[in-house]
Image (cartoon, rainbow, N blue to C red):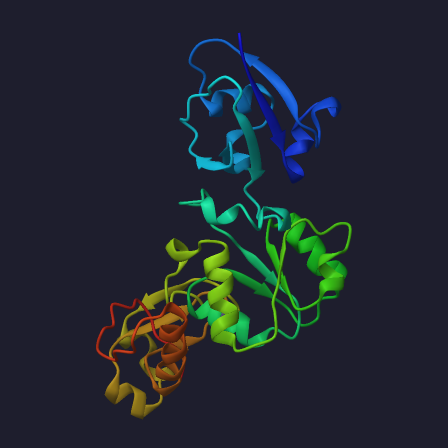
Length: 261
Ligand SMILES: [Zn+2]
């Protein structure tokens, strides 16, 4: 029989028997076993897993185990203590979502402008933010170390002081969110995805100047705001381009939606 050492992190431990929780443990196997089959045989549904490291290298579910492998298994939800490992991840399995602390307005605005799912409500207390983080598997964005040190917080990112361009770029790079970026696909006000609407259907809600200049419109189904590519859109797009490191080119719109003027 061959043998591999497993270690499961964060809430994945909830699926394990007590003697396997938060410790290294050995598992014997025979023949060709994929890491996915072994993880599931140990009781952890593969849908809960986002990152598997074998001997420190990121692998996919089809990896075939070898004798003496060391396997670290991390949950879908981003955890603070995988900070050093996340750069190994090529393609996250699930979309990452966020809940923002108060005093994060610029970060929230530009992350939403990039199409990232960021829940934010100024009426929330820290305990609400922690609850939403757990219930909706959202990573907390905060400037407060105190909040992140709370015993119930499992997933969060500390936002350091600085320009919003740098702050947002760090979040995107840190969590490898490139594939989730879809500029101008989400409502800046309420975070819901936008849908295209025909000009004729919103004609009576558009100021005459915009009506004359713009033919593409989008609407938020949640809050009913109408978006188009007006002055405000171009202001935001300049920052979005800077975050993404692309040169501003006003003519390169392949965008599905605009921003309310
Ligand atoms: Zn909205």
